[in-house]
Image 1 (cartoon, rainbow, N blue to C red):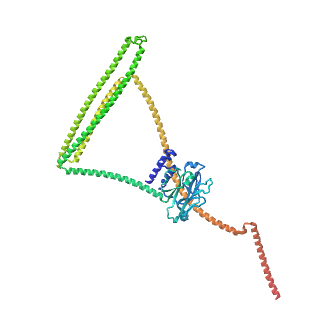
Image 2 (cartoon, rainbow, N blue to C red):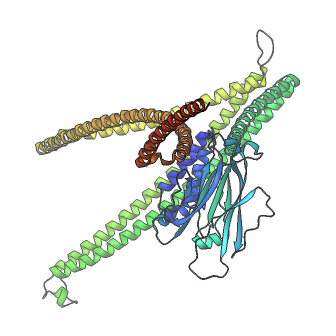
Length: 623
């Protein structure tokens, strides 16, 4: 559940990134920058994953561009792209090293459990007295070197708390990230979430780098705790939704049960006379409601009729004004025609007192036409008033008939209800219950409503059928007088449409062929994707095996290097003991001297033997 929600959140963030530019994206409701959103998205994605080994060392990096950590170190930096490409802007990153859990001295290696920020001025060292003996300052200033001469430049340091891994009692830090935010003072506080603790660097750092910089720390187990909280919250919301649905269902069931029980109490507790009085009272109330409803409907009809009459009156006034305008235009045109057709020397034009036969006839014709128009308007007005009177009479008769029908229907329904109340079951001898009577009444009312709808539908269909028959008859009459030219014209149009259909059919075939090719390419790409995924999985497995072999080889190499160093030291000692063995002349001289010494020893031995013999001879001769 948590992973799904995390992916959904990540997809929502990616969709919002793709919907506009970076500037518009920064102005979203969330208030976070691109880098802050990317950091939050990565933190949410890593929350449910296992923690990496703890951190053992921090190395702040200050420089230009995208800062790269040294060999064996890692760095997580969310830096704006424009700052990566600038060669004049200083950037800050924090590299870190992790614990080698396979090392022999892993238990004695110090791991980081806390990070704080300290400030100092000039040559004064940062104060760590209040922090404790386990805290140590990282001797790298977070601020870039200032070009301006300042007798007491400010400094910002990171101070870490470390303990041996085998003796650590606090949750160690397992991840660290540096996030660049906006420089505006009024921006909302950034929280990386996902189990990270967000630490904003002091204002001196913001002034030096031109951006708010956050150091986000993640402790061991905090990601799993965050994931569990999210999952528990989602489960609680789902359970609450289920409980509310169950409560609504249970409430409706209880209400229906209470209503049924109330009906049963009414059926068993009231006498037939009381039931009859109650039914008569309800019938009277129903009739009064029906009368009120009819009165309301009648008032609505009258109002609608009045609106229609007002609209017709406005239309008639507009039509009269239009006729008056047309009359004025016709009079002007008639006068212009009469003026152009008359002889310039005629008495009608030249002498207004004279008399002309043509002008007099035209004026008389014009007057007759005007009288005809007035008579036509008067006739139309009389016919409209007559039709309106007939309409009112028919409407009043219809209302009267409808009122009588409604009254007869209510009387008949009350009569049937009384008969139902007096009805007795032939088997049990009991009368009908109120619930059964209401069921019969509702069924009858539903059937009556359906009957009225069917009648109305029948009338509508009959009128539509009559219109269609008239239309069909008119078409038949028109078809009889269809000319050959019209037939040829239809043939030409038909041929044109056939050509268009063939063109569309060709285009459709091309599109189908193109779609088939696209589907084949897509299938090939999909198969290739699956194959590539399998190859990537195999390659990752091989890479993991090779990493394991590489680790073992590195351990063996380290052991061999140690043995090599021991042998080198022993060889150096033996070389020191050799003395003159490195010189061939000394060796030859040593051999010559050795042979000479052996010869001298032999001569000495011979001389001693000769001396002994002579001594013995002298002693013997002397005796």
